[in-house]
Image (cartoon, each protein chain N blue to C red):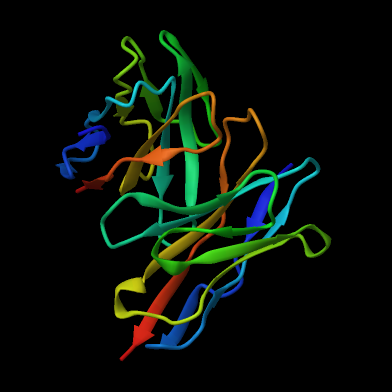
Length: 112
Length: 113
C-alpha cells in the first residue's frame, strides 16, 4: 500500500531530552513537510523539504531540526530548546507536479 | 500574504440536517483552496479542493464547496448530515507552486442523533 507512515503514534519523553519523530513515504513524492497541531490553533508549518539534502524553515522552526538524506524519509528532531513541545505532529508529502499535500496519521508527543 | 478564517469553532447539527461550515480566505493572488477532515487522533484526509475551473467542487462523502471570488469564500456543505460526519474540519489556502499551506483554526462538527 502506498502512503505516509509516522512512528511512533504516541511518544512520552522527559523534559530536556531530544526526541526524533519518524516520517516515511512510498508515494515517490518530492516534497515533505512537518506541521505542529495545538488545540484551537490549526496547523503550523515547522520545516519543509523539496529535494534531498535541502530543507527550509517554516513559521515555527525554533527548537526543531530535520534532515532529508533520502527521498522517502524526513525525520524531525524536537530538541530541548523547544519550550513547549507537547503537541500533535503531522507529516505531509506532495508531488511537486500538484498542489495537494497528503498527511500521515500523526505522532502525539507528550513531554513530562 | 494568505490566511484563512473559519467562522465557528464548533457547529452542531441534527442527523439528516444540512451541514454548512464557513471558510473565508485572504489572498493577493489566485488561491488554491482545500478542505480536510480529521477524526480524533488521526491525520488529515483531503475532502475536496479548488484550483482552477469549475467553482463548485464535489468531494468525498457527499461534501461539496463553492468558490466565490467576490465573497472570498469557500464554504463546505452537505445536504444531509450523518453520524459518521462528526469530526474536525480544516480549510486551507495556498497558491500555485507554493510550499506553505495556510490553515484555518478548524471547526468541530457534532452530529446529534
